[in-house]
Length: 303
Length: 86
Image 1 (tube, rainbow over the protein chains, first blue to last red):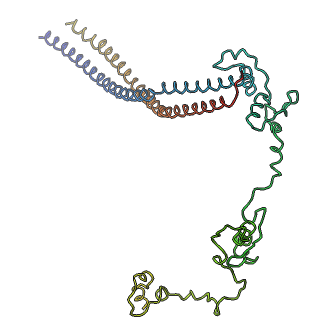
Image 2: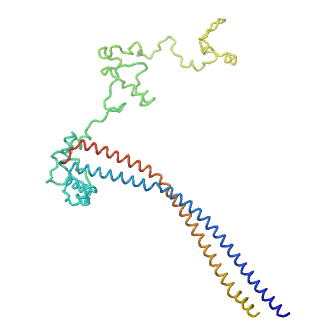
Image 3: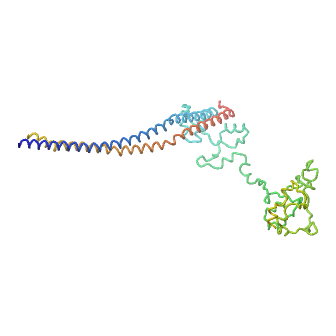
């Protein structure tokens, strides 16, 4: 009986050990599975983002290639034009004159340009000057002397290069007359030659209403320049506005009517009684007076 | 019987620790991958966002083409106006 119990005990221990191992396997494998799922989700995000990158960067190569081709064509064009017009030697000298040392690099489209010793081309490029002159532009012909001092400090630049051009370009502008100015500040003021309605503002009225009234005092179009009161021989054959149309002032402060103008009359005006024409009592109203007649509602409300 | 007990002892003393050690190592390796993957995803997202401006290259391309065309027009005009060196 004892051996049986011993075998049972050993078997139970074995079973416990196996169960323990299985339990450990389960725990760890579940944990690993959880981590692998996280990794899978992360990789899905990565794949999506990488797909976006691939999609967005797909046209970059072609576009950049096209841009480079266009820029190459532009450079070739400019270099070719410069060499064609100035000649290889002068072209290298001109470039070197603008950017010291650039001549040694030569032109990309003309490898032989690297072997050319850049000539010293100063401020005045005779061939260019003559070309400008032939084109009708003001050019500094024969002003610069190659044996004289430098016309321009290439390190700092200066206004000395202006001396290459005709003198009017340097000093005359300060002495030129001002541009015409409209209004009281105009360099030339024309006195009034006519009075068309209203009064000519005196100093008191100008002070009260403001400086804009001075414009009226100066007159707009003087007679000698063809104003409306100019002599007939200066006017057009059929002036649209003559003196009868424009009217004229009396030149006096006295009222034109016997009673004069009552400036307070408007203070007591009543739209319900004073508006519109006076219609005869009992007459059949005309359709054309409909808009001018007093509204019945206003009459009733006034009563 | 003795061998059975020895087997049990080996099972507890050797097999179980080795299994636990190996599984633990696998778990640690899996855990260490997760932050790296998340970092890669973040970087890929940033890279994708940076490439949003790539579409503007098409506009740049058109501008360059127009500019070079303008330069060609000016150059052609100068070619007509000015005499050649030779």
